[in-house]
Length: 214
Image 1 (tube, rainbow, N blue to C red):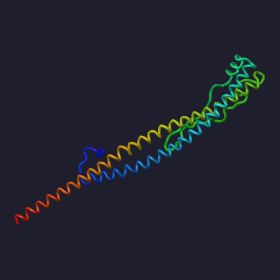
Image 2: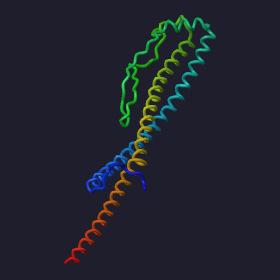
Image 3: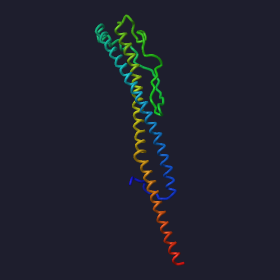
């Protein structure tokens, strides 16, 4: 016999209650399974975006480091380091959330582009070379890619957590709760049928005894 819910009396009221609970659990299971499938589809979609964004960021970083090595070869490592210290280190951005299937995922919004000209970086054209400007621009573009990548990777983590939580709830309903409700319902139906047969047999005996006395 399957696992049943303990402490449930074999009555018609209990049977009606179990039937309602079983239908509700089955409906909840169907809805959660649909949510799980939709979340998995969204998760896979964002994973594809992550892969594409990571490739772009890695390519831009390779370009930036290549130009940095060229700049260091032309100006010297110390000179390039001094130029980098002239540049503002702060990055302003807004942080908020959006919802994907009820899951909060981050949004990193920049007020504009991170790419700047030499004057905005704090040094003049006479202080540097084209290789430094090219390297700085590539690093700025790479940073934009990295911020977008961070946003997407956090979305993947949040979606993965929600997928796992929804899967556990689906499995709990499918393999634990619904079988227990169904097993308990069948057990009560069986006990009620037995009680009806016992009552019928008892009534027949009483009727037979009354007829014999009559």
